[in-house]
Length: 319
Image (cartoon, rainbow, N blue to C red; front, side, top):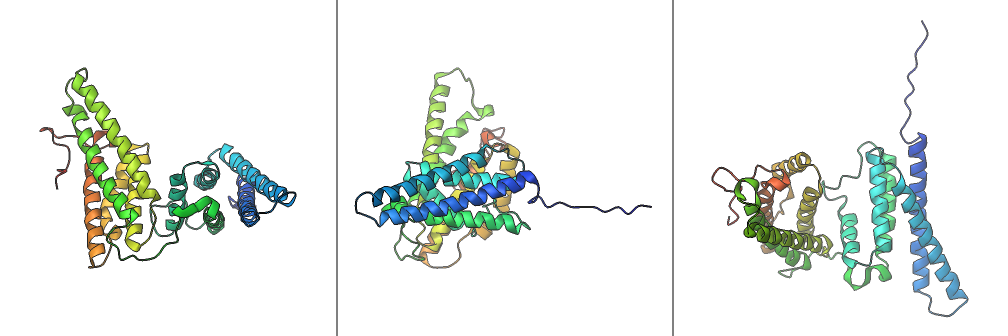
């Protein structure tokens, strides 16, 4: 009988993945070159022809980086690792092309929190080379964001702790809680068993109110995701915002409800510890957040059961 040998090929050595990894490595290298070129240009205040050489280096590195992003994003999303590389390329492209400082702030916070939240799912267990490639790119992008020209005055270093009663994050999170409450209230009358005649004028008004409330909630969530992380409690509130972002970003109701159930099951792991005033206040906001998320996830638009036979929609918002 002939011997049979099973040959297992690593996914990293297969042609499509090998080409994608090579392109992604080139993307990281060009981003590092761009950061170095912009740093050199930032320290030069004299005239041509030297200035032209500095600006030319920046333009060339920027063009190369965006080209690598475009090629990576044009590929087919064949598996979870390619998806992770493409999402990273999207973040790089956004930082280099956006005119919205808040968008850069959101990416900055995501990079800072990627190892501190279980909700960041781009890493793959048992794929060290892939995870290392991601980290090299994330570190390069964080370095680019920290440039004065990119960061500006809105990007202070994390202070670790603060003694003030409120930070930008806690203010933003309080606003998010209010926006979640308003959206849940505006959306509940539109649930199918409770809506009544959709041709009535009141239905159209209710639709407009719910759409406005949803827009306000998205705006409040963006402010939370972009707020400075100046103390440990800010990181916990940011993670709450990131949880909400992941819930509403899902297209599949079953996947959304599954994530929601997981969050509720592990609620205690997200709660801030400590008996000092800031910790107690943060926990109060977290408890309120989970209560409001439960109300939102009970809505039919998010895959929930909707109102019961008496027209009640999930938990009372007054609690």
